[in-house]
Image (cartoon, rainbow, N blue to C red; front, side, top):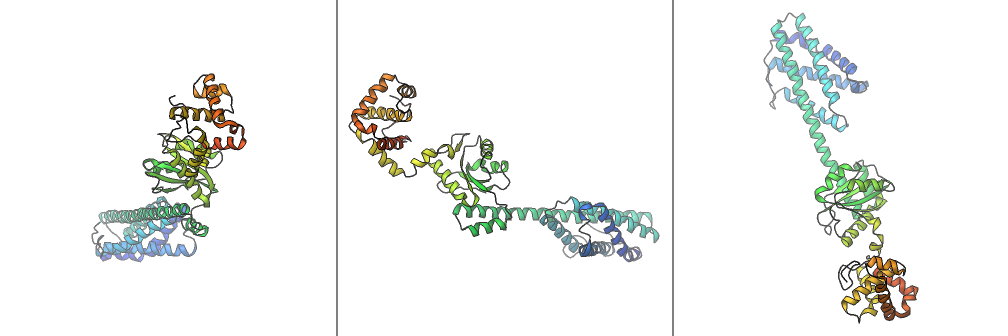
Length: 401
């Protein structure tokens, strides 16, 4: 913006009337912009009045001595002050609506009062008209500087807050001491929930999912080295009935949902979700794998070598059978245990004739003898066969016979 020079005889009466113009401007802003009514009370009001007077003085300096927006111009300090004012509004959590309204009111009142002074001093109409143009151009410059300051502060504070939230999530999943985690939450003014639920989500959709969840949801782009292409969401207070709501919102994205845990124990929710991911593999497209629906599998696979040893021990009596025959006997034994020996239900489960079940169970009794009546052995067999092996001689139920 470039200013033309007004003659000293035009500027002099304006300068002498400046204090009263500042008072009238403050009074109008106080009355017409309710958000600033309290701010103008007391000592703060005096500071703002001085700031308004300084802005008006800078304007008169510009129109009397020329200048522009270059660093050496009298306009530079005013723009810096307006920029700082915009940043201050953002730090206070306020939008720019009130500040821009105050600029508009201030421009109108300042012009009205300054124009009245110009008229009383006998200035010609063209001079007064051009003077009006300069007043509103000046206010536009100040408004733009405040808008820039507000936007920069929001961007900066947003990035800083996201970094702090990420560090909080990292502290939780790392199992840092309680005082460290609590301090991290307080630093970012994050209201601690009752519980946190770990959700593993594909990286491509995790950020969008976070926008659909509780605003306190914590996000880590990488869930861990052993969880390829998965991100982590820590969702607040998704326990009880809220869990069903969470699962509905996650539908269609192939996620794994851990248990709800007291928020300082969020790491244990992630550990279970990660184990479910490793045991069951990535959910098929669109599914939500809820760890609460797979507790048996998670328990019996907690120690994989021990489970393998238990299976070998439990299936030792079948060692002499041909592999296809052994596989059919294993699946029959698993179904017999599941259906508590009810032959018709076992036959329906295996899609075979009840006589086939009878024949196979007769063979199993030959091989196991009285152990099929021993509660300890029945428990061993139940645990050993509760989760079908992913590989090996024992095929899953429903495989070819």
